[in-house]
Image (cartoon, rainbow, N blue to C red; front, side, top):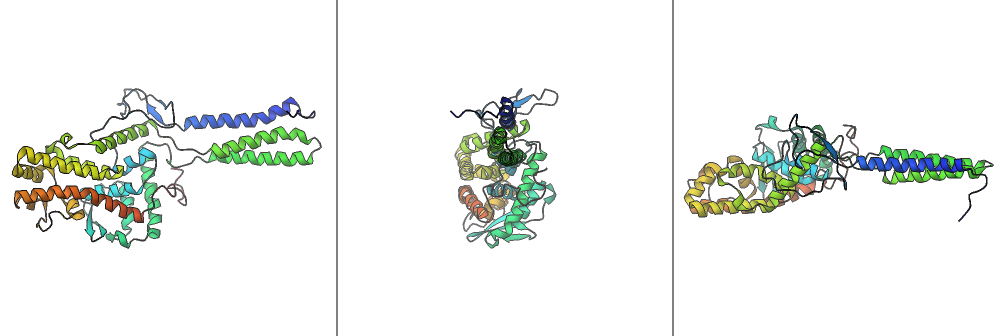
Length: 400
């Protein structure tokens, strides 16, 4: 073991330990602060009622809540498919845009139509005032200023900048809802910047050591500053934690995702199938389980046919289980009924019941693969995987 040089005093050694220990303690503190918060007085995923107490605490292990998730049989509260898809992992993905377009199609705001191997997205001009801010920007990311586009005609380079703006709109929405205190992808770089300052201080101490007669006395300080700064630079960046509200929103999204991924036809009440379809399909796209959900919906109609008979089941589907938005989405994405002339939902009731019902069920079965193909086409023009963190090159997005 190399002895400490005689001209280095214990006080100077202590002076080198101070920045090192200070950096380590600061790092530990902020790593704890980067854990998500959760409500402590209610069931995970629930939000305390006004006046009932809203106690919260950091999760004890890891960085986010990892307890068991019970299936949730209705959509998350105060959310949209894009926001629920984002709060699960803190990243805006291309499938969140796909889910938003499907949701807007079901609401009649846009139309989606298959044109050969391509897809056309068009504004209908209906009820656009009902769109949330992030939905409007997401739609503009695809359409730009055009009323209608074919996805195959879009060039990725042209969409990339608009997609960054769409990412920011979604990130801003989850912050505005109180799910995050600031941008979810902010890397909190100021702690790493402090590390750089310490490293520069170590360099200054090194220069002083080289020119001073008692150069050994500068070594402890230089080592402490350098190692402490390196720790902050290497480990100082970190995720933005979810608030307790954000953790509740994430748990709700995970619960609904679990339900959609494991849903069975007998769980769907036929008299409420219209509402089920409207809520399930967009979230199924956001969670990547659209094929399974579409298959389950087809099975639910088959079960109605067995239980009620073809004519009764078809009447139920036409009158209550479906609605024009669902029918238009299906007829736009799949060949609904082949040669059957079914320009609108009501026309199904005028056809031979067996043929009409078969067309309807086949439409649901084809809808899953059509949605997957549509999502793939979106992915061809939309940068996915958080390439730009939703921040780079966009002024002010880290500060909101």
